[in-house]
Length: 378
Image 1 (cartoon, rainbow, N blue to C red):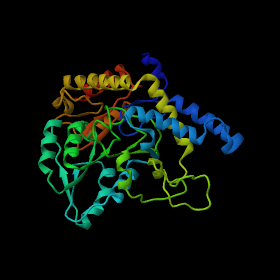
Image 2: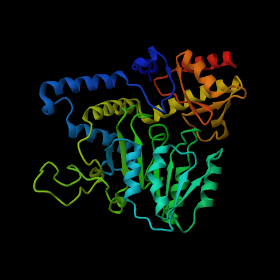
Image 3: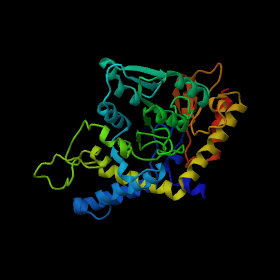
Image 4: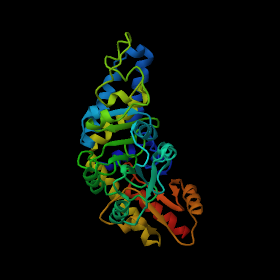
């Protein structure tokens, strides 16, 4: 793979070292060119433009993601963000007083706020404690499960530590106990292997703008085919029903696929952006993307360790991750972030630690520069 060509395809590299890719990702030239072509065509012919048809773009996005996730394209719906998908599930599930729901300690708000209403309705909300290793996490999670457990809403990867959760083991547990497994895939899809069938995932929601290099404001909702009838839609619109292009007479029958949750007109411009980014990643190969991310993260982790930083991912060496979280005694996180920013290096602070997340457009030399810059501070 010509990684220099990939590096050059992202103009951000001429301005700074962007290492907050598990937060948001800058656009590559492929996305800029695709959106420019689309807008030019739209300016000339409006909705009749042939540059990127609305239906075709949606179909192409879902085809790439279906292959990546090992699901059917009609089990996917294009939505706006992770929180929207989590609300679809939370508000659509039928739980009864006395049931229990397991969430994740220090979880991202998108997978907490949608569930809080259940606490006022007699549902007990439990929180699985974070641990140093996926194996320890599973043992803590298992201890919370009982005959009252109806659902678990967890992240694929913890956003504050970078630790992947053992989804296959969790999925097997949920299958055995008849528990719905609901996953926030924002930090996992595109960076970790995500086989929704093998992992027994019932529902999953994730954003486009992290490891998938997509735009802000586009998300994806997965619902297993056998779970579709169990979820009551909380929003209905013109695209929720069959034969949606025939506006009259009104219809009562919902689409027999996840598309019922793309309830009205989507953001066509952002879909074009997202499709271009997915095509870019697919051309590289998602497995190649994953290996490159892990290689860059490993290089950075080893460099940070050499200058006295403690790297959390070294606690679970058998579980590679693209999120490098570190800390150093005597150096406060705000000071470190300020020092990095002065050198045009963008990272994030989470729970008092520094979080880096390289992507394929970053380079080994950039990882080395981070170590050099922090070495001078240390």
